[in-house]
Image 1 (cartoon, rainbow, N blue to C red):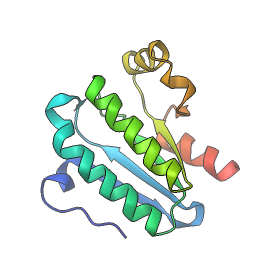
Image 2: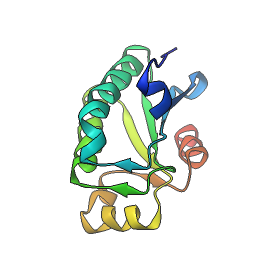
Image 3: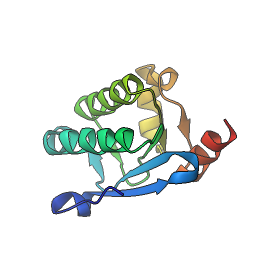
Image 4: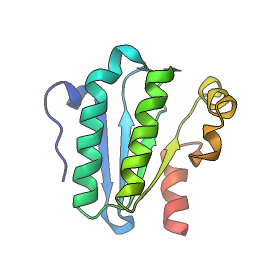
Length: 129
């Protein structure tokens, strides 16, 4: 089990689903931008690495609380995708609001990341294969 301490216990929520080898990471912040990514990126990379080492092969990043994503936030998500895939896993995104979904369409990242309405739908897709 991955335990969060300090500031990240207030900024992130983790849910491990052992039967599906899934780790759901929910961002509690309302923004994923330049002001938050300097500290958040290394923490997320550590969480992903711990998950991979713990046998997780599927990761869901739940963005339901996030209203704003900028280029720094996109960079964090792309970096996580590379890390997960190099470790043999898969990553998907859940809970994107309309503005963030449009950003992903414009940047064509919607082709790189499977996206789902919520984390339950993402986990169900993983379990369905």
